[in-house]
Image 1 (cartoon, helix red, strand yellow):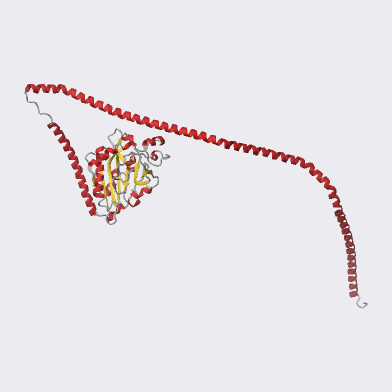
Image 2 (cartoon, one colour):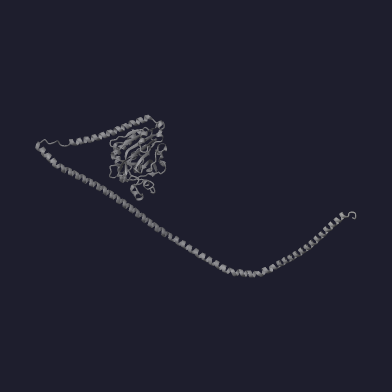
Length: 500
């Protein structure tokens, strides 16, 4: 990609602050499905920061790249992506916001246009940059992962969570460096580029745009080629100062320059088995890119100088008509110069007033349109809700009438049942008395034989008891007499044996 295309792309990106796109935010320890954009599926290791948010950038339902975003500085810490692909034609530059960074309870689960997010997101812009932060400033939304390296026609690279403030000249050089390195060095030295892992980041400075968005002190790029038996890893740094060229650094040296001392690639991208020959070829291309940058700087200065000289040479030669003419010309020049300067000042003032008036009118118009859209949206929502509520109430009236009727019927039936029970109990008392009186003779007559039988059995038992008592008494007496006689006869026998 040439400088002309980079410049055109940079001009388009300056308008990207008012449009839309798509991403998905991840809250887990890694980047979820976007872990595949890191070498060995492992994001950079380092101390965790509370102000850092992991984002899996999506577009049209597919993962495009991963971003670690700093809500403190409102710029990305880094964006990770795979090998670059040709940029699609006809894609529209867009500037996007992530609703759930400012409002975790937002119903918008994907990135959206800022104008749409204003209506439903609470405290929009409290933790991220907005399009208005770059309006009327000397900075543009510089993408860490440029659209020119993306193959996504609905590119998620236009999201503001992938952008850091850059001056137009630095943005142009940064894009030119990235495209040159990717096309001429990194991708050709990594086979087909399918195993090429890229991480681009920014280190914030103490300066901010509108006291909100941190301006990078420098931007950096880390590349890891994971081709078996031919891999390599390199780092690049570019400071945001004017006329600074991109610098190549070793991966470990780049990690030391970063604030959190991140380990960018697991095991330093297979440091023990890297191809030094390919790294030398990459360094040769880097030197060429640096020479091209220096040449552009010198050509830019020489063009300005030659332009100034051409302007001087186009002026008419001084008059040589004499001393009087020279004195008159000098006097006229002395008198006319203040008027010319005054006219220039008035022109600049009028142009500046007109410019800022147009900006102000545009801003007021935008706010009025957004306010009208918001009011119409709320009015429509309230009207629809009102009619839906009335419809629900009207539709529920028959059901409620039916429920009340059923309840009244149940209550009447319960009252009737209670009355029947009372009547039955009142009527049941004399009926039982009459039944008992009627059945008394029957029970009495039926009981006479049983009573007679019981009396007979009682008399028989008494007679049997008397006979048993008499016979038992007589038997006992006979037994006593017999025992006494037996003992007396036995004693006489032993006392008088001769007589016996």
